[in-house]
Image (cartoon, rainbow, N blue to C red; front, side, top):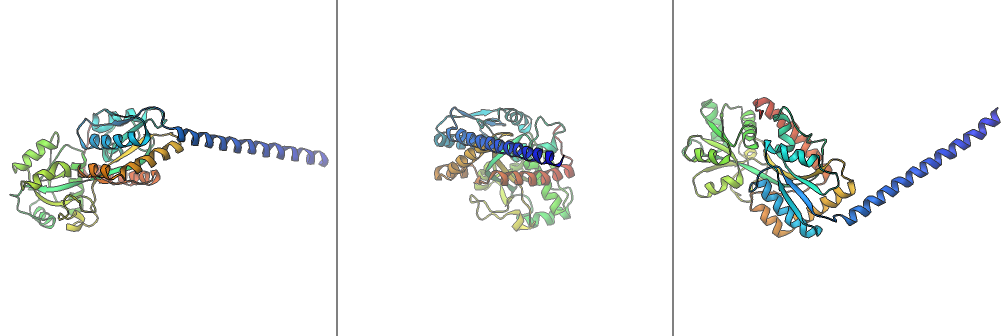
Amino acid sequence: MTHSRLIKNPSRRMFNAGTLTLLAACIVGLSAVGKVHAQTFPSKPLTIIVPFPPAGTTDILARVVGAALSTELGQPVIIDNRGGAGGNIGSAAAAKAPADAYTLLMGTVGTHAINASLYKKMPFDPIKDFAPLTRVANVPNLLVANPAQPFKTVAELITYARANPGKVNYASSGSGTSIHLSGELFKAMAKVDMVHVPYKGSAPAITDLLGNQVGIMFDNLPSAITHVRAGKLRPLAVTTLTRSPELPNVPTISEAGLPGYDATSWFGLFVPAGTPVALINRLQGAIVKVLAVPDVKKKVLEQGADVYTERPEQFAAFIQAESVKWSKVVRDSGATAD
């Protein structure tokens, strides 16, 4: 009986070893196929879905990167604008695209860190349905005031707002936008009572700010900087942790009175979840390469943005942290888009 067991056990071990060898060979084979696929990729045009209308910052950045990628990869890059629902419509379409690296999404802080808390029903999961490639750019918001307002610095604004609760009105391009939530984060950190006045877009908000119907606004730097340079608006601070090269003499809010304050409008590229790692690495490498080209960097800078690139895993960790931060701001402010 013992002899019989000794015969069976080696046989089973041989079978297991053979199975493991076969599995290892399959894994190596699949890896080789993935590498070959990455080497021949792309063999047809690519599409970057922009989940906002043409002419906005998201669209402009996608076109700048798309044109450079087309040259780098040797294939046309088509820009597909699918606006609506704060970026949710286009993002949902990108999430449902084949996971073959031919469809990319130019996502934003809104689509991937704010909307999940803002909308009761989401047509996609910003974490599970996408594979991050890299951030493309950071765009600071600019805290601006009408020159008639009785404060010239962030410290003076905080002092005034604390002494006059509810008397400082701040405009935004709409409830739940990064512009609105920049103000809510400021209120929470400064412990001040200011009144939010939402508009249907940045343009009408700026119009009322210029007319002193509202006192301040946390506007995207590209749309506010023209009025600052014309002397029609007073810049108090930028919302990022570092100063903007476009306004080097304007301090950050963190420097000017609220240490640690950071509200960045960021933009990054994604592919659908399940895209092979070899193709993710191929695309990410190409994007980082074109964003280092001086002419491309200049075009991004002209939008008031700073080029920013990172590894996919770094971008994923950043998104997780941003989601936690902005979900708290949305919850505390009571903002909703439904």
